[in-house]
Length: 166
Image (cartoon, rainbow, N blue to C red; front, side, top):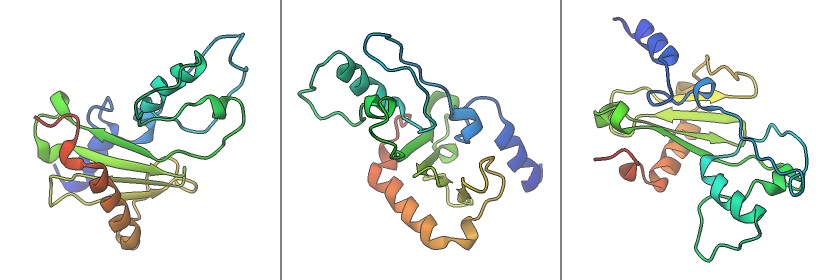
């Protein structure tokens, strides 16, 4: 399979266990309690790690430990509209070879960066989400400063400690 078709096949592969494109990883998050949570909707992306601190916030418990996520209640209550930096990865049992693992960042709802930390021949992907929300126009080779900045950010998060590592 030539590189062009391989890239297309990778983009349409079913399930985010293999990919980290937005059309596969964006899902709705719904909290419901008519007495505590205001009715509303937000386009601000939140993360899976935000669920636990949100539940604690809703029931009024202050965590005594450092929790990585942040409560979504300020977003629900229109007190905070700041986009959250999102780290995403495709690793583990669905992708047994480390060389095929992917890591990515979604930054300020503006940028999406994808790369394979354990594979030297992978061409990094960078998308400007405001003008390319479908992630079709990879601009990484024209924006090497951003690519290097985002790659360092992922490495600081700890790509060597990716959840799926065996």
